[in-house]
Structure formats: C-alpha cells, structure tokens
Amino acid sequence: MSSAVYYKTKKITLNLVIHLFLISVAITCLYPLLWMVASSFKTQEVIFSDISLIPRQFHFENYYHAVRESDFGRYFLNSVFYTVSVVFAIVIISSMAAYAFSRLRFPGRNIIFALFIAAMMIPIPGSFVALFVLLNKLHLRNTPLGYILCMISVGLSMSIFLLKTFFDTIPRELEDAARLDGCSKIGIWRHVAMPLAKPALAVVVVFNALNVWNEYVLALVIFDSKNLMPLQRALMMFQGEFLTDYPLLMAGLTITALPIIIVYLLMQKYIAKGVTSQTLFG
Image (tube, rainbow, N blue to C red; front, side, top):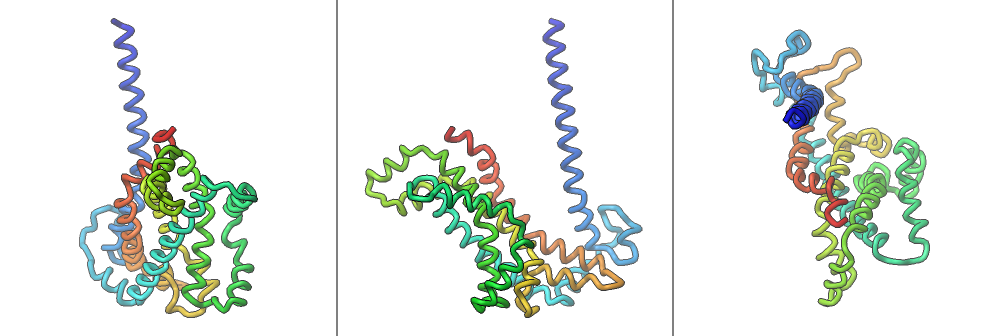
C-alpha cells in the first residue's frame, strides 16, 4: 500500500514540476509579444516608465499614424505578394523534387540530393555577391521577379529535405493501388502523396512564409527602388539616427506579426500532425 502511495505521489510531483516548467517557458515566450501589443497603445513618454501589460490610456491613433506616416500599405502589399508567390512556388517545386528523390531512381540522385543538403549550410549573406552579379547579368536586379527567384532558392533546400523525409514514410502499397487504377506518376504525386503530406506541407508553408515575411537584408541588396521594398522597410522608417518612435514602431510590429500568427493558427493542427508524422507510417 505504501509503495503505491509513493509511486502515485512521485508521478504527481513529476507532472507538477514539468507543467510548472512548461508554463514558465510559455510565459517567457509570450511576455515580449504581449508587451509589444500593450506598448503600441502607449505614448513615447510613458512606454518605458509604465511596464504594465494593460495601458492606463489606450492610444488607438498610434496604429493610424503608423500606417499613414510610413506608407505602410504599399510595403504591406509588397510583402504579401512576395510571400504568397515564393511560398506557392516552393510548395510546388519542392514537393515534386522531394517526391522524385524519394520514389524515382535515376543516375546521380544521391549526389544531387547531397548538394541540396550542402546548400543548407551556406548562410544567405555568403551568397550576396554571387546573387548580385548573377541578377545583374540576367537584368533581374531591382525587379520583383529577381527577388522572388532568390527567395525561392533560399527556401528550396530545407523544404525538399523535409518533404523527402515525409515521402519516405508513405507506404508504397498506396501508390501501387493508385497505379492499378491508372494513375500516372504526376497523378500519384497529386492525388496520393500531396494529400498525405499535408502535415509536412504545413511546416514548409509556415517556415518559408516566416522567412520571406521577415526578410530585409537581401531586399536591400537587390532593390534600388524603395517602392519595391518589403514591409520591413516601413518599420525602419520609425527608427531615426537620434530618436526612435517606439509606440509607432510597436504598432507597426503588431500589424506585421498578425498575418504570420494567423497563418500559424490556421496550420496548427497540421503542424501538430507533422511533429508525429514519423510514427504515423512507421
């Protein structure tokens, strides 16, 4: 009897410690986000003197000025266009390439896949000079197409690796059944592999959407025209040489974070499945 009480007490204590730890980690991650939202409703005078998460007075005009003074709408639409274009292209290209690496047998398959993996180890700034020269020769610098192609290239390696790993776990019997029904290789990719790969695709979408949405340094190298710059350009306009308008900056950051949060919430159930995808077909 005493042994059962001991193990039950030990289990409860262990669960309590784990939950307290997870709650502390969650608070640590959420507090900066909540502070950013709260600060977006404050004034420059009280933003650092009042550190509470509930402002004494809500200054909604900060959002109006943030959108109005920095030409926020143009940069926001630019980022939406770049993000949607890049993510759509990466999903199509990487899924087809990953399926080919997983299921097709062709000369040099392992070598080509190894090159994609090796590309993941090259940091983006390390390729700036090569990209600048290449885009100049192709007359694609300072064009949306040049920027989109560069961002597609940046996200392909990781996406192909994630999707190939998932495709490797799909039972071949499902493909054999589709082949007996008259499906071609493209048909199997579209009607069998892609629907089953929704968890992995959700990870690819969120990862690349976040990467493109927050990118700014590569845009500075490629674009000369300010009108083509992404949303991060608008945020930089709140930071002067001697003074930073923090309430407007926080309002802009809040607006900037909302689309990615919405995308994550929409994809959340698929991402959760993606974490356990290795055991679904194992």
